[in-house]
View 1: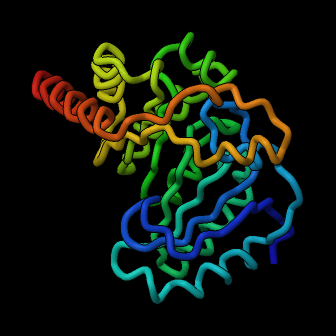
View 2: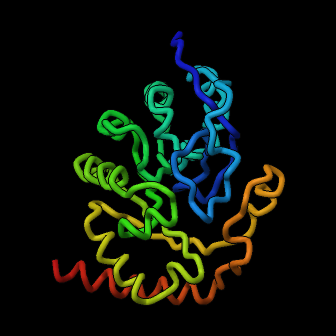
Length: 244
């Protein structure tokens, strides 16, 4: 038995949006970013270490009959890369059970990502912003660590799903969308790109935690507008890929 323990906020047993198929989604505590649109501020701090890898994997295995050929487990957060030793031990145990593993991350961990990338089957990469100034304004952090992760991700050859939250007044212009298409071209093996419209579902958490909500006056992203931006993005992205 390992002595390694991890801080788990919650476990969703029948997730349908965080990777392919039916998945158990494990939300790990801790994050270095303070994204203006964050809908999980309760996971910013690491909190109590409440699981061993064996305890968590035992719980995940109970859902294995529902995974089918496409499903599995997704580690999300927070930022799962901040608990990388715990994460690696969990992945090693899950590999023995032949369970598909997805990593939902912003790529801002503690460095040395090769070993954990070798252990996962899919990376769901959250793009925060595409340049240094925008990234700093949005997250309060430098873009450099995310760039280091993308470098290691490219070397790994793992399939990638890219996600971009679209916030009105920040990412909802054709100029940004065009630049985003160019930015994503540098990420290898991208299988899917998703736009997530900004919403207010996490606003009540800020009130409960007595945190300042910096976007409380920003309207939710119009879904039709978001869909149109996505169509424009895909047109630009595909045309750029043909040129390469």
